[in-house]
Image (cartoon, rainbow, N blue to C red):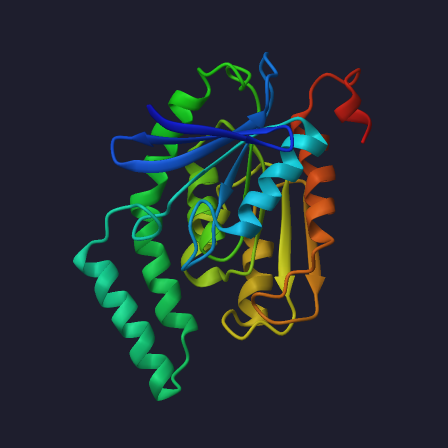
Length: 254
């Protein structure tokens, strides 16, 4: 892993890195040593690792929970290399929008192809991150991601035993149901009741498919991109509950 640069803002260290062409960022408390739980963030479609909402979430997890946080660019996004398939998808999105055609099924199929590329990238990054000072070696790992983040995060959680808890949402059952049936860690699932891209029945079926003994459904009114801001606080409590092992630390009592 090659660290490209480091900046510090409001007590949070932000280090950009590259690992064999995978572009990512690691956030952690500035100047703090010692291992801490790690949360992985998956960005949405058309976004990237430094999208402002993702950066704001990372800062909250670092300053409010004491976590280390990492994100990488999904294939075809941000600084990652774009393939011919990625370019065709972008063209297809523009054409369907112009024609007024539904986008959901087209996006779902492409996201499945991105996940096949992204899961091994996340695993390679996780191998290295867990050896770094801000992260507790062999410690619990959380995953947060909705929409494209869920399309990648569900198969990642199904394949990766180091992930101990996950927040998913805004995705459907058609492509992800089989992988969800192999996910047994605690899950918090976000559903937008008026989602224009993911049919409500499909999202509910995905929630039902998770094999997790502990899973919670958070259904809110609104469209695909309208997840309420207060769900950030809920995810903080969720990750503290499942990732903080030392109950004597201040973070454990938040």
